[in-house]
Image (cartoon, rainbow, N blue to C red; front, side):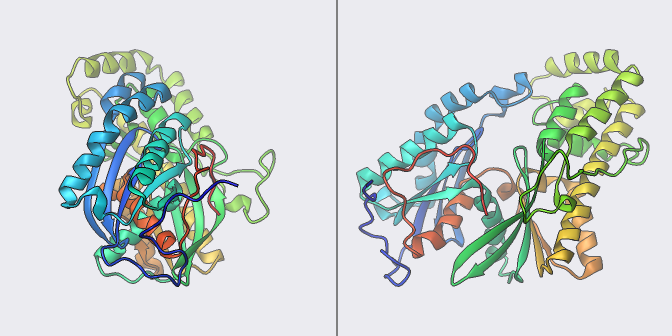
Length: 395
């Protein structure tokens, strides 16, 4: 049997005393962001520091796992030190250490997990393991607490990012959150589709912000992408997942590729890619003059198809499961058209739709520390056997 990591200041059970300070240090390293944050009682963000690796991976058009792990190794100590300094506290002031155990890139996760384990052992503090997907949901809950909003339950959570597109039924029972996965992507995540189509069109990385900014300059109805459907076969969903709530973006990505091929756009794409590569720290605005009307219309139509599919299935699930609210999180939650579409439809249905701030939409450690708080109160402490779980599921 593996021994439990030290938990001298933390409660042994839900009925145990909760320390007055309530400070949790969160550590996140699941992909290409090294992040650390200090959050008080799962509600007050004292610091939230993120070291981005965008420039490292941009030349490759995607995250290179080995490079990500090396960057995490270089960044984690200074990022944690900065988070503590900004929070105005010391390691000794903390009540617990929280860390993302998965899902994510194995090597990247291991950097965070091993550092957190060593820190918890050295400080004789409890260690809390957090699911990255649950962290994204708690980013919205953290925002709701900040705005003093009451979240109507049960809530439907859409977690949509570069690596995930999931639907969860979420409900709080006795200060503990329970999740049921009712929908998922069967291939590419929505954010991954944005990245790949942006790369296809010679744009920058990550592709989501480029597509989002350029789409406002095109006609979203110019390219007739049809509704996305997922057949039950060959995809066999778990019993609780209806094909109605499954997502698939690979076909849409292929349709964009065929459009490029049939409209002979390769030469202009190559020229655009070369020009942007020569611009130091290129931004989406730099690409506008390099995109003709045909390209802008393709971008706008592609984004419309993704957004409408996400919205249609999310609201269908909310209606089916009688959800009292919808929360949307993950990097794609920063997409302006998605926000506008879901908020407008929510108002039409008198159904609250809540997004996190842009800062909390992408990967960060504040959401990890916030998600750890109810676990800490319940005495849900990790053991010395804790390790990275790249394929960790939720619900």
